[in-house]
Picture 1 (tube, rainbow over the protein chains, first blue to last red):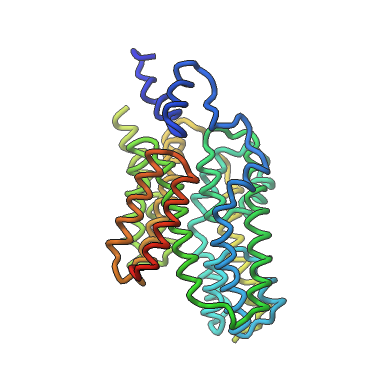
Picture 2 (cartoon, helix red, strand yellow):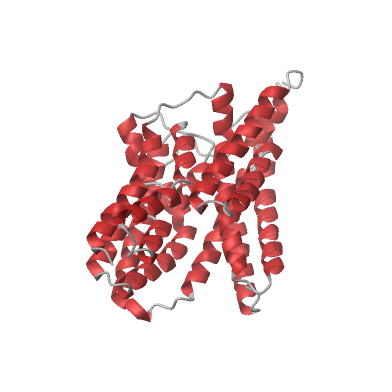
Length: 258
Length: 104
């Protein structure tokens, strides 16, 4: 193992959660306790719990904003049911008076960040295309981050994605109902709190994902590139271009090294 | 304003296309240049989403550096301990402290 250089690779793949247990499990060749052999629906629901407060705040704000903007309560809830994307929903409210083509284009551009997420999950889903399409529709930023964090195995990944979706979707729709009914009573200051919760969650999940220097470089490099590109293009497109460009650059340099 | 039902349908179509179309593409193997690219893609897109979120939060902050330092501490703790719950608990606590001190 030492001679062919696979030890660093194996340690890097197995090292996280918690280090000592994984190091022991590496030397004893057993599965680390923190990496289950199979992902489950229930596991995803439990993993989703820290995300739910942020969903509640955001969805209530959306529900209230929609009713104030001229949507009926049923229409606000229908939007959460059919669109299921906080950024696209709030953006659509802001530009509700523009031509429908503009609303469509804005929704696509803001959602372009899902493209690399779906492509990355495709690699782990050994399923027919229609099933992958259904699972892709269920995807939001938080569920992608959770699924990426559970990278130890692909067994049961569809169930895991479904569990994360059910937790997020039910919370999102229920909180939209509450926000639509409460209307102007929902404080706008909750938006900042929801933003802060989401940022903390993403910082933690991204940091935990960075198990090698190159993966860390991918995360940091894409982050910096996305910020720079967002000055000249919509945020969703900037994230897509940054993620693909940095991943391609790292992949290219890896190929050259080999 | 347009008819709300049309707005809903158009927004749903835009989001659905962006999410579903890539899922219909053929998958690439784990080997080769594309497979290598796919290994970096999850971290890259999470990094991009996280950076955009931090930038958005910093815009409304009276002391962005306090926010950056707090998030760096949380990231270091998460990377070192790999304990999601501990890092999240500390992260939420730090955010509460920043809010209480009117730094965010």
